[in-house]
Amino acid sequence: MRIIIIGPAYPYRGGIADTNESLCQSLNENGHDASIITFTVQYPDFLFPGKSQYNTEPNTYPYDIDRMIHALNPVNWFQVARRINTMKPDLVIVRYWMPYFAPALGTIVRRLDKSIQTIAMCDNVIPHEKRPGDRALTTYFTGSFDGFITLSKTTLRELDEFTNKPKTSYPHPINKNLGEIISQNEARDHLDLDENTHYMLFFGLVRDYKGLDLTLQALSKPVVKNLNIHLLVVGEFYEPREKYDTIIDELGIGDQVTIIDHFIPTSEIKYYFSAADLIIQTYKTASQSGVSQIAYHFECPILVTDVGGLGEVVLHQKTGYVTEKDPEDIAHCIADYFENNRRKPFSLTMQQEKPKYSWKVFSEKIIDLYHQLQKTEGPD
Image (cartoon, rainbow, N blue to C red; front, side, top):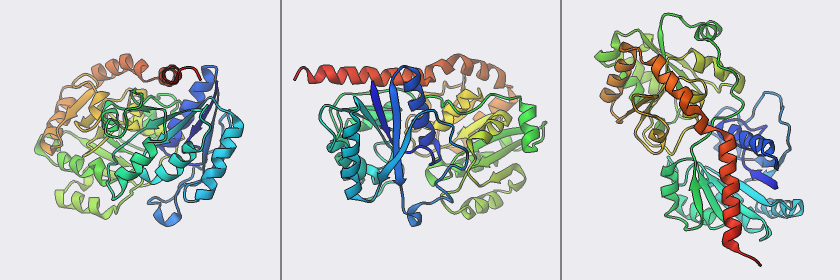
């Protein structure tokens, strides 16, 4: 089957690009002819909140990644649709994660030949950081497609507000490019970390909705204050870092926190997750998070707040903790984990759970939906 994936991919960087690349690889491994169409321009520089949009590591992908789409040029959208029609794919999968891209992606799909099945792969339907026009843009986007697959049940329920087309859900798989699990000592040596300290890892882009402030408040609570716990905050800040520096100073926890405020290339991820004792995701809102699946890959237990789809992948007190958005509750779970040496049994359960999160299963789910759409259409 000829399949085209539309969305971020190399040379763009980040979790969405990584997952599109993993999906493409999996589809090809399953015997399909899959490739990716990505952007020539995603955002103008003045709208992009980070330092760089681009991956500086070499391109090693054994499939085509074509840069075609200018997110702000309507003429280009029609040109891209015509180009895709000449490629005659059986299926086009479009990644959707924010309404900003709805005009470009929705218009391209509307101009495709009716013989081409279209599936939207949705990270979010209702954005974490809401803006005027979001619902109208999402309505335009969702009206373009034959079917949908979401990465959490929460997003699937949100999608019900916008469409009654066929849809399914499957948890965010574990990406294929994360590297091997290495020993904690080797990882800590590489990062120059103390082998006798307990480390929690808050990983990824820092935005208000991810709740770093809740983690910092929990770290200051008496129940964890004397447990020799150190927090690593690792990722680029998409809002002023000074806000968090002020919180750290006011709480008096400067000696318990290290901030590494830049994007971490894929080749370095294994060191941070292998060095950590606990991954912490105290989000205020969420659909799902690829960070949880990175933790599963490295078999490092996770603490998440009970928002969106985060709790769908964490088995409470078996692979980690699902807490309230309350620093006291978060702190008591942290204390339980370290005081009772939960790492080994939690990690063992994560090993057993990992097969659920394979791209092979996810890609098969998409193909099942494709066949369902064909049956729904019926004969010409």
